[in-house]
Image (tube, rainbow, N blue to C red; front, side, top):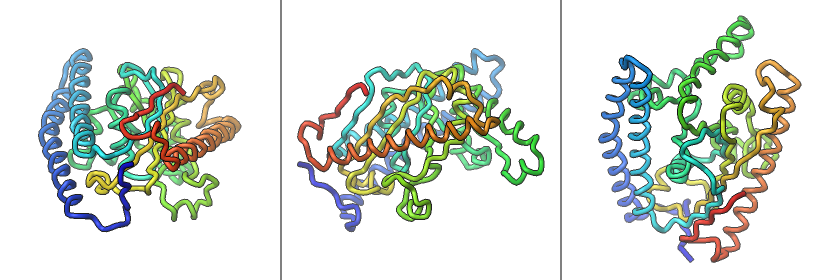
Amino acid sequence: MARIANLSSPTTLIERARGIMIGGAITASTLTIGPPLMAVGLLRAIAPNKILRHKLDAMAINLANKWIGVNSWLIEQALPEIEWQLTMPTDLSLDKQYLLICNHQSWVDTTVMQHIGLPRMPLTRFFTKWELIFIPIMGLAFKILGFPMMKRHSKEAVAKNPALKLQDMLEAKRSCEGLLNQPFTLLNYLEGTRFTPKKHTIQQSPYPNLLKPKAGGLGLAIQILGQRVDGLIDMTIVYPDGIPGYTDFWMGRVRRVGVDLREIPIPDWVLAGDYEENPEFRVQFQDWVATLWTNKQRTIDQMLQRFNHHDDSLSPANIQIGAK
């Protein structure tokens, strides 16, 4: 049985050295891939026709996948002691269009998601605030890679000028148009923020390992894209030895990670509804999301139970893959 790291214990010199080495490698790959990505974005901005823009989009996605590929290689080669438990459908495809929901505990979630998704699903994007475009490098990368960027007005502004609500919806639809002509995975962390015990207590969440879900983002995504997507994927991530920080992961202090993916059927009534304008539908949709979250908590309980039983058939190089 692999040694289980104690995330609360002091870091060792070996762990620090490994973190510095991996951090240097990630920085080097970022500096190598970043400039070509920026150049592709500049060329796309002045491209004279759609055919050329589509080709440049493909080049940008390929560059992003190479960056993720470096991180995945580092996970496999520099962090070989991680025990992975993975359960997933067998028919995921790089050529489809997915909505993805996931629980959120740490910045490590995104790294795990990219590592698992790279060979199986299209590049993951998520809704971002327009203001993020002003963050050096990162903001431009979001824009170049087709992350839907939205300018949403505050509730106070909409209350004063209801026309702004329609403007926000039109902006959301426009921001998604670029996704519709290519494969994509559009992520929504339904909790809206990372899980912490303090937030859990303040919310009085009924789910032991989850914050309460916020249905609005998923409702908006389904309203805009639902008729065209190939499926709704539910990803559940667990860290049975405690929620790690980002540096914990790259220093090799995380020894066990569980990931469960399953496809969730989207009912016809969900696809036909209007989350923004129909209050009755909104309540029904929120109840549906609450059911999804109850099922997710049950999945977390089952995953933790498998880890705690230390069943040899469910661990180490045994990545368990099966249709759900």
